[in-house]
Image 1 (cartoon, rainbow, N blue to C red):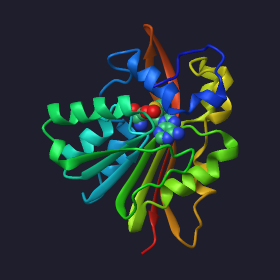
Image 2: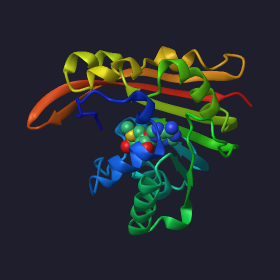
Image 3: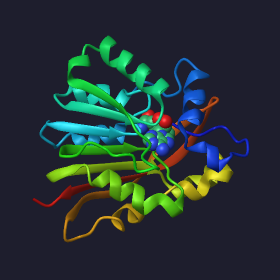
Image 4: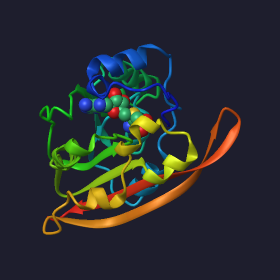
Length: 217
Ligand SMILES: C[S@@+](CC[C@H](N)C(=O)[O-])C[C@H]1O[C@@H](n2cnc3c(N)ncnc32)[C@H](O)[C@@H]1O
């Protein structure tokens, strides 16, 4: 997924339920419907259990996880996204392995805890909120469980694909490490991965931040 809307954003409005409901309502499908490839790679070695996907959007990752044996809760600020995600789960025959919760993680709305896996894919957070939001998300991982974070890497600034007004929200693997206390977390995987992204018929190389960490038991 990418942010191709280059209009100057209103950052105070940008992360609200209203903004995202409007965005999801404006199109029948905003994202591809495919699970994130890096998520599939990172989760592959793990034994299925319970999972929480924060900022789940239209639910492609939730549906993929549920189809691979996980019992998954999807969280998003947008009720429109969650309704659509639940519909996709039903169509994929995995509704009974999924549940949904509306929460604003930037406002630190309470999240359920005790999950074997917590994922957050392309949830870009203003720098002044970053540490608090990602600590809040990481707190939902059970001891012995895993956290997987994907993001657009700051190198993508040079692709011209990202909204230049929002480039300061892109983040590195190191930004994620910095919120994880090494006494409590072991970083298992930390990568910047390049992939091809075709936009309006033109191929671009984009870079993803990929971090998997295990919470010590
Ligand atoms: C770029 S989309 C990524 C969606 C999905 N994770 C994926 O990879 O396709 C970011 C998602 O974060 C959600 N989001 C934005 N602000 C949020 C907030 N304050 N609390 C919870 N979710 C939020 C949006 O509604 C959107 O679905």
